[in-house]
Structures are given as structure tokens and as C-alpha cells.
Image (cartoon, rainbow, N blue to C red; front, side, top):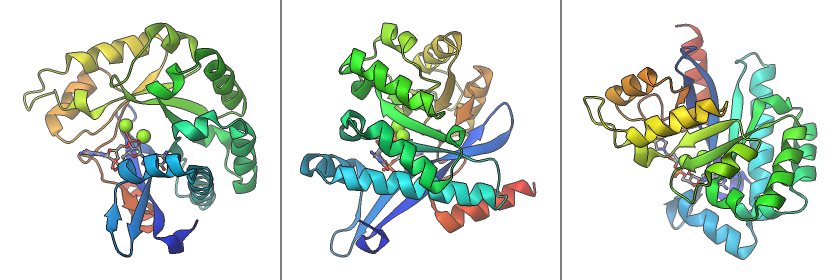
Length: 247
Ligand code: C2E
Ligand code: MG
Ligand code: MG
């Protein structure tokens, strides 16, 4: 699996509200098929999972994401932190921790600059096994985030028990904040719950100014969405970051 198969990575900037600056990015895989054209990862990731292709695809994504980030950090682009999505199949792979460890070593990326995104459904599946895996990943020095929070079966007890550093509030709850900044009670509740458990919060799919204001008022740590920036190809992302450094 490589670039020539029509696969590449897109990078979506993440913006820290309190620090008023770009602090990192999420990696989103892209596939442009010669015949089908653009295919959404929401469509092809589940297929890759069913066909067993996710192993090599997931390794490729993580490897590319880590080497690209290490390269940017080393060239002085900034102290960037990269977030990479893991699929359920990857998460259940008994070799996951060793794989992540060797990818970090090969790419030379500081483990503290890597965050892995997992979904609720993935981590709630087998709580005991999950906790062991999460601790082993944490021991590598990276951080963990729960993606699409609020859309699956969230067990609040596990949320407290698991060594997770970030909650990403699903776009559905950000959409509820109207153009006067009203609504979004679920987002507010998730923010206060996460903060009281010592976790940081990222709002996903932020598209409007009023949402930013409301999230800022509720001390949301980070925003991600078209309001700030869309996912971009590597060169475009680097130029975006460079541009912001001069502001
Ligand atoms: P996700 O991880 O929750 O990623 C966020 C999705 O929201 C991305 O869609 C992103 O392009 C989109 N998005 C960001 N900001 C906005 C906004 O302001 N408005 C709207 N409408 N959308 C926004 P994308 O890239 O199509 O990815 C969809 C899902 O596919 C991801 O959801 C993730 O679950 C999965 N995925 C993407 N890349 C990877 C990957 O490298 N590995 C794995 N395992 N899954 C991936
Ligand atoms: Mg994600
Ligand atoms: Mg999400």
C-alpha cells in the first residue's frame, strides 16, 4: 500500500482556544481511485476492516503520519502534535503496542507528540483487555483520545477508569449550538464532566463563529472544524502553519 495506490494523508489543523494558537493536527486518510474517484474513509475503512486490509493500511497511515510529523518538527515548523485514528481491528491486534513502539522508533517521533484516537465502542467492548492495552500504550509515552464522544454507549464509570487524556465531542452536539450561541447543553455537560476528570476537550466539526464563542465561554480547550481550517494535503498544511507563525 502506498501513494501510488491513490492513498495519501490529509492534515486538519487543531486550534487551542486558551493559547490562541495552532497546536497540532489530525491525520485523515484519503483515497482517490482511478475509476471511482474520491472515496470517503467512512466507506473504505469498514471495507478494509472486513477484508483484513486494515492491518497494512493502518500501519502505513501511522508510519506516514509519524515520519511526516517528525520531519516537520525537526525542520522547525513547530512543536506540532499529531492525532491518528485507530480502527477497531487495529485496536484488537495483539501486536498493536509493539507495532506502535517500532513505528515511533523508526520515524524518530517523540512519543509525546503522538495522540491515538479511539472510539467509545472500541474501548467499551472488553473493558479489562482495553484497560491493559491503554496502559501499555500510555507507557510508550503517547496520549489517548476518545473520538466521536457521545454517539456510542458511553460508560461514565469506564471513562473515569481509563487512562485517557482527551475527549472529542462529536459534531452532532456542536451542531446543536445555534447562531446566537444557544443550545449545546450536551456539549456543556461533556465539557464540565471531562474537565472534572482532568481531561482536555476538543470540539469536532466547528463551522460557525457563534459556536466558537460558546465553546470559549465554556472553556473548551481545542476546536477543530471548517471554521478554522479544512483537512489539507501535506504541502498545503505546512504552508498554512508557516503563514500563521508570522501572524
Ligand atoms: P473522525 O475521526 O471523527 O474525523 C472527523 C471527520 O469530520 C473527518 O471526515 C473530517 O474531514 C470531518 N470534518 C472536520 N471538520 C469538519 C466540519 O467542520 N464540518 C464537517 N461537516 N466535517 C468536518 P473524514 O476525513 O471523511 O473521515 C471520516 C471518518 O473516517 C473519521 O471520523 C474516522 O472515523 C475515519 N477515518 C479517517 N481517516 C482515518 C484513518 O486514517 N484511520 C482510521 N482508522 N479511520 C479514519
Ligand atoms: Mg478522529
Ligand atoms: Mg470524530
